[in-house]
Image (tube, rainbow, N blue to C red; front, side, top):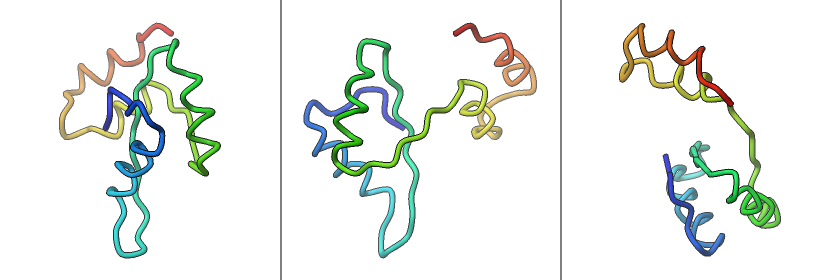
Length: 79
């Protein structure tokens, strides 16, 4: 999980590459502010496969860290 993208997209690709080893697949989450969205174009140019997720979907991936109340509150997140 990254909240602060690397200045150089090549550095981000290197960081994400560490999520998978020995031919295995891995996943990474990158949170961006609206003003940082052009960064996605740079990552796609480097061959990254990107998928946008909703806040609710991300929160549901962390059930061990969140209470039922937290998950219920995720439904009220404003976009």
